[in-house]
Image (tube, rainbow, N blue to C red):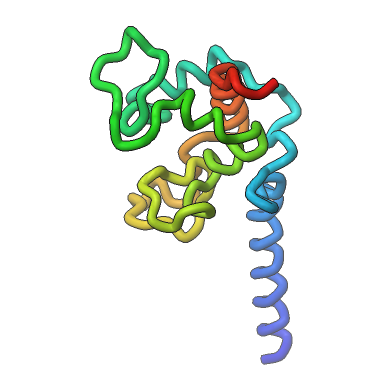
Length: 150
């Protein structure tokens, strides 16, 4: 009996460690994720494509931005250049990874979180909306909109 319990505990620890390894460098500390999620730098052009996409990022559902080719941009959230002017790159990264860390009532999805989510279809359980590289690409694009900070 004790051996079975010990084995169960070890399996739970191993499972938890694998989840931590998968998202280990995405921990928010003091409102920031200081280190990039990938070794490769973000690509602002790919980031712009993700932000403007109605299938991937869905950012324009709530935000508006410098996308003259996109009709029907959102007005539920601030215009993107206004949003990014308030934050550093590490703060932007944290807000994209998990906006609910800052406001539990936000309607902005957690783009890189898999736990404690509501109404997730079974086929998407355990998956993030964006992967690490896509997060970095979006952050790189948003940083180009920030003309108030060097």
